Image (cartoon, rainbow, N blue to C red; front, side, top):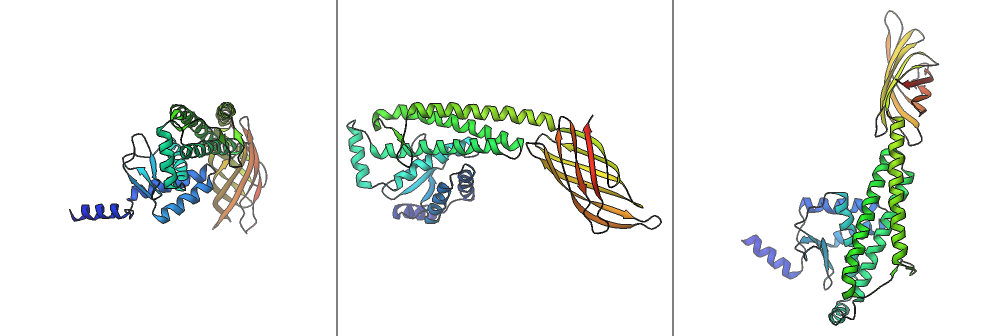
Length: 336
């Protein structure tokens, strides 16, 4: 009972209650989401607001994932909602951008805009917040398109493309929601941060272009995965004699082994690395070199494997990289 009374007093006094570990994790994930989608300014804003204690969790209006109390600038995130999926954070990220605009608006001016809204004269404060929401969606989409085209691996390209599709879908939902609300808030033209107008038709074309870009990236990713993934068997072609085997997985990671003879000894090593979307191979090689016949001496080595793969065939260069002779040479392998 005492704790309930204390919580009630803190709420009345305007002191923010401490967040739970799960709520802290949600804000950590939101910060990471902003950074992943190129919204570094939003990530900095979120960090500042957390430090000030102006973000809390609790009840919100029906359907709202977050809302701002313009009188004190605090933002409340729906405490009953669980944010787990990428799409959850797309929605929360946009909503928080919307509510951040309300934080900087004057309370008396807000009351005046509510009066205007009541008499069907629109609400400029709401239009400003919605404008920022649309710009946030555009920024997310542009960054994810960039990632889907420049990702170093097929897996990363596919992930970025799938996320881009989700952002485009959420962007369309936001447009649909605006069409329902604009009768109260008034017509508006979205403007970028430099003040240049962006027509609704232009944004619709952008969404179609982003969607096509995402689908193209997914198709390309799948094609590249089919051409690289598999088990490769081959041999060391120079520098030593022996076998070279590796497995390239659908996520573009690879692992394998090399073993054979070198001078008057033998060696064995394991390799782990990855293949980029262009088929370039790079892996670390770690193993043991045994030199001598009767009483061989073991030397640990670490080196690198480089090369390229295309259409079921791969070849390249390897080095054991140790100080005792540094065995190195070429290799080749192919799928069976």
